[in-house]
Length: 192
Image 1 (cartoon, rainbow, N blue to C red):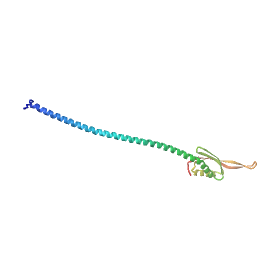
Image 2: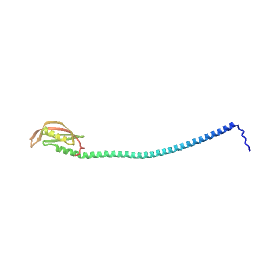
Image 3: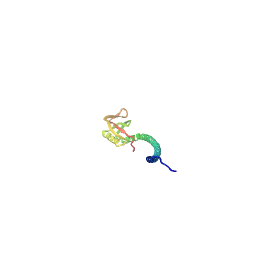
Image 4: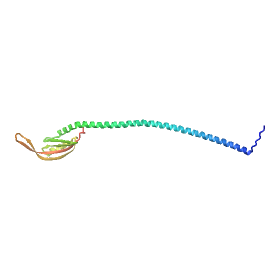
């Protein structure tokens, strides 16, 4: 059988060129789709890895928040206990403090001096009494200043006055003594 090609040669070349172009187009399209698929798969893997990392970090943050809450509770509790211990310590100091102050006063009083009164308002104490002379008052103040229980020891007043002592019957004796008033700040927190 004989085949006769009725198409002109020009059309024959165009058809071959068209086939070649279509083949090239489909091959390029196939390669592009393959590359797009590979890029999509790579990006999907990266997104999945990032999502896994985010979930792991969220779990870690949750664990750290729990530890942070525990730490805040610990700080609150520690602060409360510290305040309670300070109150207990203050109570203990207040319990023995007045005894130590009175003991210091009693041992600091020189001979020829008599205490008439002691009055304390807040931490400020006023001591009144009689002394034979100003030198004895000065020694008493120096003794108080050397004690850690007393600070800011100040002489409020000193005056020469008559001190009467009742005698037998209607007899009474009068002595010329110095009447004094001393102010001092008391500190119970000092330990010996």
